[in-house]
Figure 1 (tube, one colour):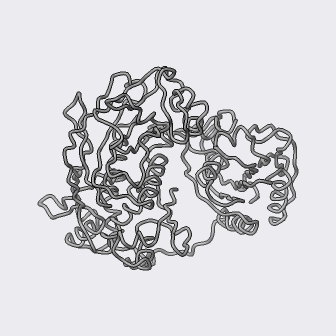
Figure 2 (figure 1 turned 45 degrees about the vertical axis):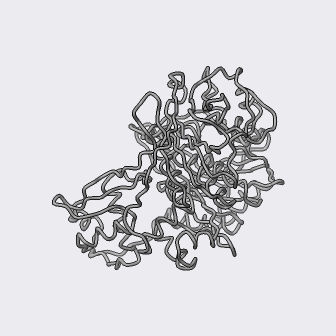
Figure 3 (figure 1 turned 135 degrees about the vertical axis):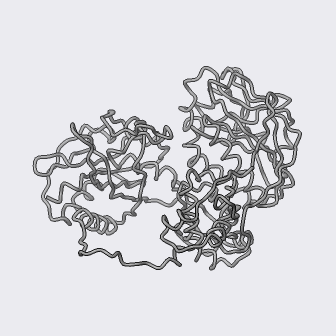
Amino acid sequence: MPVVKLNKKRLENLVDENIDTILENIPMLGADIEREKREEVDIEFFPNRPDLFSAEGIARAMRGFLDKETGLSNYHINDSNTTLKVKDSVKSVRPNISAAVIRDLSLSEEDINSLVNLQEHLHWGLGRDRKKVSIGLHDLKKIEQPFTYKAVDPTRIEFKPLGHEQKMNLNEILNKHKKGQKFGDIIKDKKKYPIIQDKNKEILSFPPIINGVLTEVDTDTNEIFIDVTGTDKKAVNEALNIIATSLAEIGGEIHSVKRDNKKEKTPNLEPRVKKLDNQEVKELTGLDISERETIDCLRRMRYGAKSSEEGVYVEIPAYRSDILHKWDLIEDVAIGYGYDNIEPQIPNVQGIGNTHPIEKLGDKAREIMTGLGYREVMTLTLTNREKEYDKVNRKVNDSVSIKNPISEEHTIFRATLLPSLLPILEINQHRDLPQKIFEFGEVEHLTKKFAKDCYHLSGVSLHADAGFTEVKSIIEAIFCEFGIDYGLKNSDDKLFLEGRRGEIIFEKEKIGVFGEISPDVLKRFDLEHPCVGFEIEIEKLIR
């Protein structure tokens, strides 16, 4: 999940409240305070709230929650007279694009860092690692409109990408540039690649890979051109709305961009409208809440809300991409009411509960792993075949598939845990080594008759001296603490390095694997240090 690094003083200024009050209330919005330092605080948000991936978005929400500024935020959109031409050549490559211009900015280094971090969090959250959405930010004074979005022969266009002083063509960027190597798989099977250029044929961007050096944003930038490209039009527009309104929160003026071949202008910040029945709010939350109180709670959560003949009339901000159903609104009513204000009640049922054996096992596993210096993480139970199998050198097996998946990222239930831990290391490379994480979690095993919920224990350790001896000692420690005998044999699991991998045998049955992660797997996750890992079908130890 995204961890947003915040400067305390800057957050205080944006919210107009002291930092202690902010940090006391911020968990009520669905956040966890990861760590707090003298001048900074790291806060983890759920992926369903991409509008909170920046200090600006958090401040906007907190001002409402603290009753400093309630109701719908109104953002005025000016006409910039900027035109974007979109050629038919991109339809088969990366068909969707939206853009905006932000003027009258006065950017500090902290503003730029916040903007860049928001961009990267959106690439991960809404963008699915840029496959679905990618964002470009450009210093407008260095380029001239109209801008053109088109697909070109990758050998015939050259420009200086960020991070390089020499010009490169698009093929060279995919093969030699760090970003090209990381994200090139998104478009490398296309005959032509997308670019954005200005009136003078200057290259702004090669989406979804890299921007050009020419338009790099710095503290002298007072006008920004934003481009958002992708495969999903709705997600593209949502990402643009979040970026544009975040910049408006620090004083920027939003200006529209017109498509040359359509009447459409972007961004469109008109709120969506839903009707809410207060009786349903009562039934779903269990609160004895009046319609007036429901409206007040929604306004605290930065919605427009008023009473109507058909119920509560709710205006949903354009940056709230997570609102799909009226139940999402009811959840926000409960948040606005304050979970700490809800009085718990003992259920009126007979019987005495007892801890399930799998929970006892999980508690024991967590105690062992934390004692060994590992930190617990939780990853999504939904994944896709590329992440579950292809990226970790495993053969595709039968998996529990989602019949009507809403995205390409979540098409199957995970069958193992270890492939989900490596992306955690990938997005935390800036943190100190060693990094040791584990998960005790649920997976789905597909049998001939049905799918079965099972529990696994998995862990990875990343540092310069990580090796087979370390992970073998971890396995020994785990089974010693459980007081269970086990055996080992050679493994052919290609996730691990040949000759430095093994299988765990319990009662003549394979229940786990461990070893050094293969270098080609590490490369796919952009990991530069050795890494070891293991996975145990821990549920089988209950017997």
